[in-house]
Length: 507
Ligand code: ADP
Image 1 (cartoon, rainbow, N blue to C red):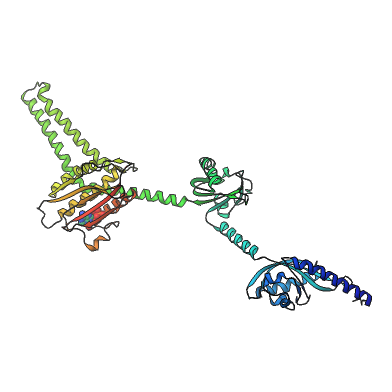
Image 2 (cartoon, helix red, strand yellow):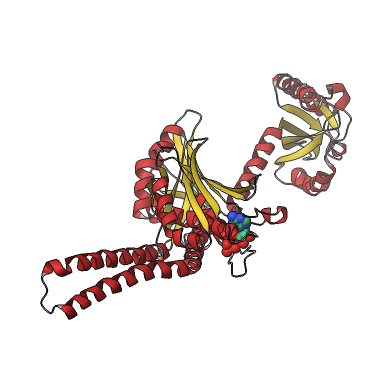
């Protein structure tokens, strides 16, 4: 090290004093904290007044404290490793770290450090540091990193699109689903990833709505580069700058493939069970149907025998001799045909069609359908209805199914009373219900429902009957609920059970 002459020493001192004065003046005004430190242990030689705002210390308090004592314990090692870079390299260094305030809490500082060297000896004299509060930035960085991680790892497809509808970013789920793993997708138009119909929906409805209100939500079908179709629920957001101009769009698409498949499966399952249950109900009704068909068939045999007899008596017959038995046979044959049709209708598998239906008409038909069965069980079916009733919303075959289940159950329950010979009554009534609904009640005079069965009555496969399938009530309830109605049971105080269900009145 070169020794200074006294003259040189004095000049250095004046330079130092001048620099310090300038620095102090600048520092006084600055909202950033300017500080000077000893090179060995970074002790504060000086700190500008901003130290009070940033760290809570007064200028006098902080002087003499080593910065190492205020670093967060987790950052100290990092500092020790980096110190040589500041000391021996280019001497300029920016770092973001935690620093302890006077009240003990840590704040984030962003500091730029610079070594001040003796121009002659090149020895480090001190370190000059400019620090500013970085807690907001660190918090914002953390939040956006967290957000980015969520976006990247969510199971939804996330796509960012420019104003010209080209893609700027896709998250991993989107890249996988759209089969883009090794493709450079930047500037791909969105139209590559939605079906033609989906694109029309987006262009005519999605983007205009998002531009107007900020967001749009709707179902559409996306497609991968290899044309795999993905049904999605899409949330489209328009992102604006501080000035209010739209800068870009984000599309968050929730894959509905599994949901759709499950819905389809459930529908299929429901349809199969429904069909099976109708066949079972049909089985229960088979004997009465046989009886129903037997009657017109034997009537026809009688008419034809009558014609045969007339021929035997008088080989040449005029039309008037046979007109009556022939027209009666035709009528009876048609009636038998109707019975068979009704049976086929009832057992046919078909998609539900919701229409406006007259409940009294439907109930009347179902009572006719069960008349023979009721007669055999000594049950009388009575239908009570107010004169004026609005139409309801429902699928005809489904409602027939519900009514039939309840009426057949009521007949069977009535028939199982102790006195099998006594005639009992099943009463069906339709009443106005709250919330623009009608309520159908099917009352019987059977034993009612025991407390222990009450909770399980609507469970699938719950049956107390020897040959019962236990699907009737479960299916009836789900059919009624599908139509936004309810189906429930209660015991009638005078004896017997009352099954009630509600249906929406048609507009
Ligand atoms: P299943 O008629 O094949 O048994 P359901 O689901 O129609 O199937 O009925 C389930 C059970 O509910 C019946 O086995 C019976 O125990 C009870 N149940 C149904 N209707 C009545 C009723 N009107 N009175 C008393 N119990 C009934």
